[in-house]
Length: 269
Image: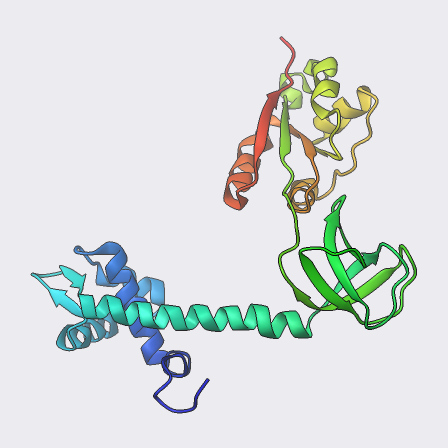
């Protein structure tokens, strides 16, 4: 950044006032024309009086147009000011991610072959694990230590996008004990659904016993919900057998992280 007021990025990051003005303009743009100053104040953690004063200034500067009590719209000048600062912030974020963090961070990977410090390597995902090897990949980096095949190795100056596809989750619902528990699970259907899954988890004693009765010991029980999500993010196909009282909340969690899933009702008729 260039010191002084000429660089918009310097201004927006160094001045809490300018950050607040930007936030208020964005809030007005999102909710115009009916703008509730109290809601903006609550969201930004300032007083309604302060919001009113900021809006008055923005109107005076021609970045907001007022059309009656509580009705405001961002003007063309206001939109251009938002875009200029948003682009500056976006450019700075890219600079941090690509030029700073990638350069100073050291990523732990598994050596797919013997490696020497200073080797240029390709970095890729396999079976949910990060690997580094001499074969060319989309993502590349530099080895920071000697490592034998299958040892952990540090990789710095990571560049490019790691070729990676997220896994999906098969969500299998079983009844709680009050409704029969594991005794009401269709075991044949259970085995059919979990077949081929790289990670199988259980939530609830009923789910654990249903898997055990079908001859399958789950890979996860404690912390299974987040463990399955983490595994799917790393590209593994997962199945989670979950008691019905936990079922809805888990689906909401999957929706929030935007992972793909399928639903399977294992309750026997």
